[in-house]
Length: 426
Image 1 (cartoon, rainbow, N blue to C red):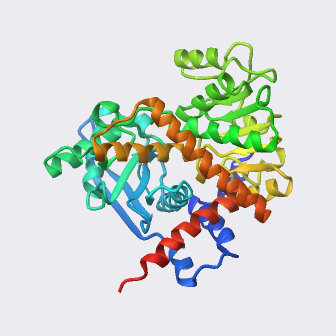
Image 2 (image 1 turned 180 degrees about the horizontal axis):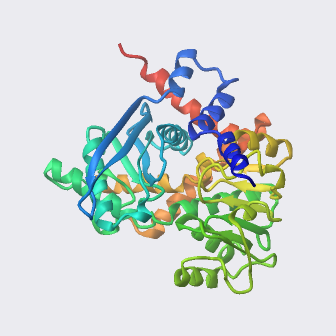
């Protein structure tokens, strides 16, 4: 592919704000919602856009760009992750914040939607530099933060240690420990057991629920997973070890591994831990991350980043079911094509909601200073995911609409109802 052609393909892919806006507009078009509420639900409620200096290890000072967006907080405190990625834009953060509003609402959690982040590459930063960036970013957004106001969590490029730094910075300003200001923390400072693998577990609960309703026997079913990080590796392990599926293809940022007869995921996890990659795994064929999306399989699980299935590759996708473990992995144009072909898509706002659901459990535990076992957390997650999936699936069947539109309708109706009940002030 020429450079010009590659640039054209990138420019054709919509921003995350445009993706979220499209799915919202599509779902709300035939809903009986007051026009003022409909317009309000589309626009971000609050945007913080900041630039700040950070001292690097070599003594230089680098200006960083950060964001925090509250899309909607009518149902409760703002909830959403903080990501550190190169080239992060305000449009990306706005789109992800809107998705969080629908995610918390479709799960019935008492939260609104938010997102934030810093435009940086954590892979090129030392641990000390990451800590300085995090603490300074926290000071910039601290007017928004609080257990009753805005509760961040990890996202791409951040982890439990970043959350610990945010909690510590906020607590130092307050003068006492405030563990409930963030979720996804280490257990030693108020984190919840079961939080780290909650997103992946939630995805597999959804896969099993869909398979039961659609008559898909997961034992021996072919599964391809795009992404092999915290979420993708958990999904792969549970699909292989619990559901008995054949995981035929996986990939990370470096490349992929493919075996049409199925990969030994237990050994693959060991190989990844030893080598840092999945490419070269014995008894597999190396393939590119792009090829993982188009291998012959029954279930495709995008678990890496957004916008990986687009108008440019959707015709090559062979899966009959797609479960969106990542945020916005399918663009609107590709979504339309797949719907016309009869491909079932479980949307991100429900499929990957296991993380925010257990974040809710963590917040509750912190507020009460009463902590649950991992078994209790997992059981509560299973119940919550099953309940939300059942409502979405029933509405889709009743109205003859896609699972995505059904999830959005449920979420939008809950947020709109909260507006109507609370009223407008003044």
